[in-house]
Image 1 (cartoon, rainbow, N blue to C red):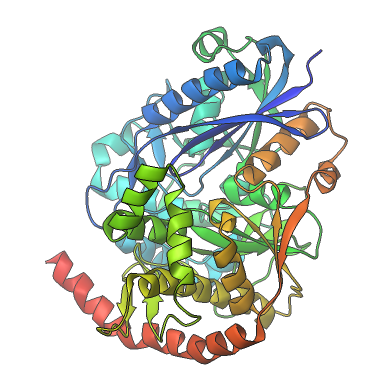
Image 2 (tube, rainbow, N blue to C red):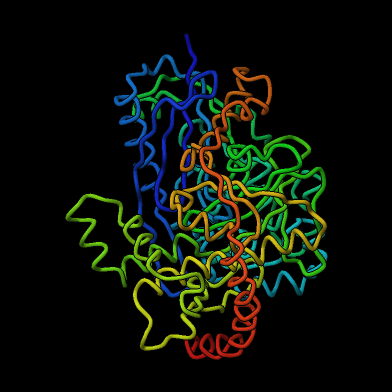
Length: 511
């Protein structure tokens, strides 16, 4: 009997392959990593061949680990990093490395889009402000800087869409990924003719748009042989990682908010209508759930900042982890706990890759502010956790300013494993934070639910409510909360004061 769902979550650092059964329970998961190249300071690219290798390796390892026969898999579905730009030819061959979400090179093209259509008009059409992080500006960059390559482009694809093509031969995307391109009419549910005409992009170069639960084809014989799967297995397109995480966190109806903490981080919730913020701090995805939207705010470098600190500063913690086999981030968390709330008045600006919400400034830089000779490595580590958390608070505040009701925040993603960080977030947010049992697999669960609905294993998305188990709850500590309430406006003013410096550094780097 075909009763298992295979979900592929193609993230920034690798692909997680996960099996769920027909009741939505986790059976097994495996991970296969890949690298990101940074040819220049604001560039971020990945090799699509590495994605396919990771999918192949993770799939074969998963089947071996779970002892599930390929013939028992009812459907394959996807989640994936969003806002990419992968040009492929008519045979689906990549024409260059993929320009991924973290890339900020297309500043000039974002300015062109603003000139041709207008900042407010694009925001009202797409639910997103104009930014070089979105696919439209990246596509325009390829057009302007690689014209010979651009002339050969058949389709521009996202990460999961490329893997779906490799499995089925279909050039498609889903509404959630389409909604992250600055090209999609959010409430109209189609590519925006107005924007496409303004930038001169032929809509035939974009993939067909599907619902996240649509079956888009079956695995070909060639792909099945490479993956170790059964040819003819149905493939459901799934959604972008943000939309998949919303489902996996249980944000499928109005009410709860969730905070994903991975390489990047975002806060979002389900809504029946988009939220159009006068300051354009908030943006809006199409939800996996039909006729729902996901207002959201995303920062560039959350766990990515912590990973940078581990690699560049925390050598002793890394050495200890190598000697004991313990997770290096748990050791770093213990070191941070040796400091105090506020890290002895040390601030960290978490803008190592520019920033999206709330500042939308690709020129922003990271930095420690307030360093003194008395500060310790424990202070540095804690200040980083607190700086990331305070930047997330600015996102939460933008929702509250729009009269959204957020009583508590569900934390998912790898960053939510740390007890200290969960408590810091509760203290900074001034709201309880909840940890479900599934953290790394929450996004995979969202993809699996879409797949299960697509082939009829599940009636609808409500199955996810039966699968979410809260295992930890942190409430704000009044004393720590008072410290953060004192530091938070200083954190905001520090960024504002340094904006002219960021601009000057960008100009120097451009010379």
